Length: 164
Image (cartoon, rainbow, N blue to C red; front, top):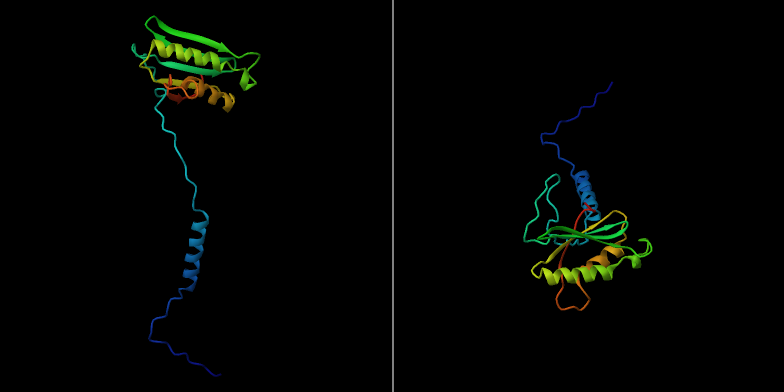
């Protein structure tokens, strides 16, 4: 039997870096594929309501104008010196069609409130689930006043959760 002798090297064994470099190059490609190149925008808004479970007393000097979009139409509410006031503006012939919502009546109401409360700037819009987006936009436009109007009645429109 012949025995082959293997000589042990005195040099330390080298580390094969090729698999590590392959993995790093694959990770770089994976990160580039998953990179987000979109830009996102945020719409600044003030807080429309207090935290859940907290009930705040309305400010006596504040109008606290709110417009709820329900399945029956608009429901506007505000505070005056005599107390809380609510006015309903129902849809004409059903609320399925965005044109049936009384945006003109809401615009007249906002102009009337602006003449009585000229310092007020904010209105809270509370759409119910299922209200078409077109109706929400029409509501915001009606509260801001006529297009091309010099002074917007309520320029600070805040969206909040559905009707309270």
